[in-house]
Length: 130
Ligand SMILES: Cc1cc2nc3c(=O)[nH]c(=O)nc-3n(C[C@H](O)[C@H](O)[C@H](O)COP(=O)(O)O)c2cc1C
Image 1: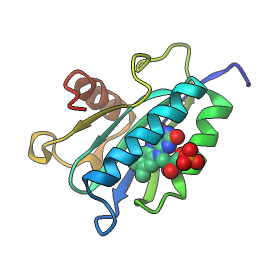
Image 2 (image 1 turned 30 degrees about the vertical axis):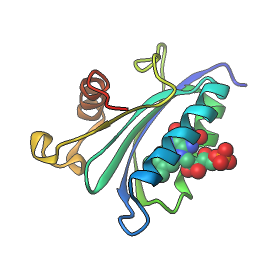
Image 3 (image 1 turned 60 degrees about the vertical axis):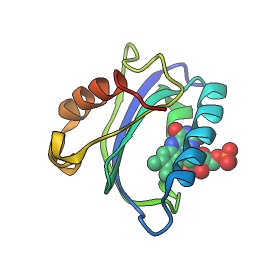
């Protein structure tokens, strides 16, 4: 453990051919189990085409989980939006919160910078569905 807090935010493209509600259930189950055991918290949102995820926690643990996530075939084209040290968590309440996004309500997830992504993730964390 490095004892330094880090926040990683990335965007990825959903691999539609392998992704369905069972895949989502499986991702959330694994994420919540692993993240809880490693002190990682965060939020995952998806629209039809993209995942947007924030991970916060011990720097080494966050980078190890992010590395595992990058090689997951359920998505591809990961784009790192932010990878920064932080003083405090913004998403400390959830091992991995989740919310679906109605695409037309936010425009394209692909256009977001780090501040816009955080604003969106916080707003979505207040209306989680599962
Ligand atoms: C969009 C997406 C988000 C994910 N988020 C997490 C996560 O927050 N934590 C986690 O442990 N695994 C997450 N995963 C799953 C990892 O890619 C990987 O399957 C998992 O870490 C393997 O854990 P296991 O060895 O315990 O099965 C995610 C996968 C996808 C596609």
